[in-house]
Length: 307
Ligand code: HEC
Ligand code: HEC
Image 1 (cartoon, helix red, strand yellow):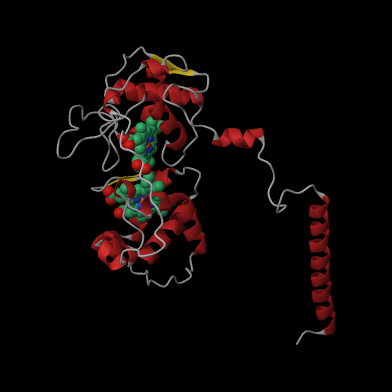
Image 2: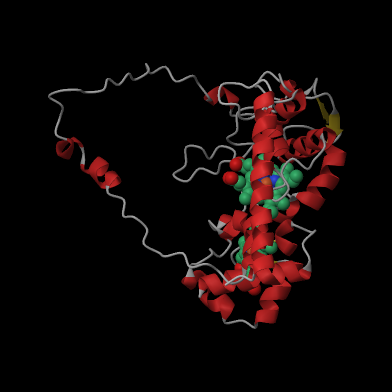
């Protein structure tokens, strides 16, 4: 039972809340509204943040430039850790060079030099997605420089080359001519409304696809919520799916031998980085701003969930 003043205080909070809610509603209805009255028009800056695609003819490229020499420094600091100093790829991270002439092989070695179509795709990809743990952290000039360096690793430009908004489309990737428009006509599917085929006869594969078993694992709330949120933000990118050879969260066989180690070793490998048989675990997952306590909490979470 609440004592009287406590009850009064609680009521006051509720009344206040109601007043606030109606004030907000009033303020909202005073604004000129779109159909449902939600959201607001995107500003030009917000649109610019999304509008970053580069076309094969170079449309969309920002002004700027960068040399192979500058690119080498950025590459060694921010890319070689995963992609290797010569673009050969560390562990299971993708290689960025080599593989020329392998596309007809049973296991083609697809790289920027052997497989990719346009230099603009390379610029766009690095700009939006790399370095893997800090996408969109490079300036435009840095993207020009490191793109130039990846071209250099593939022997496509000389060591004194400068890549710029003007020169980019002049660099043709060797496999571009092998990309052709698909000449097959579009398929138009009509929905069947009567006398349709018995779905059981259509295809066994299709049938099987319809009967994907529902996952039954019950998600218990984790005690270590700080560790879990660090994990989500900074580790899941690799440890959820096993990217680069990362042991997968919840996969006991992946973790068995690791959990057998002294936990201090796991902490220090996660904090300082670690090269194992499977690949490279970057120091703090590449998120240098994380504190030791945050990293160890995330390790505890990984270990708890993976026993
Ligand atoms: C922490 C590891 C890591 C770092 C550091 C990193 N990358 Fe990557 N990179 C990856 C992974 C993982 C992929 C594959 C991503 C995918 O397929 O979704 C990738 C893919 C690529 C690809 C496409 C390869 C292909 O053929 O599909 C390019 C190009 C690339 N990275 C360039 C760079 C550059 C340039 C840098 C430095 C500015 C960099 N990466 C830094 C992990 C990394
Ligand atoms: C860019 C990918 C990547 C990210 C991000 C990443 N890891 Fe890893 N991690 C790996 C890989 C790859 C390995 C396996 C290395 C090996 O054994 O060859 C690994 C291994 C580990 C191990 C086992 C170490 C051992 O001694 O066996 C721990 C613990 C770990 N990571 C913790 C973390 C934590 C905590 C985070 C987030 C703060 C994180 N990782 C983020 C790629 C990543």
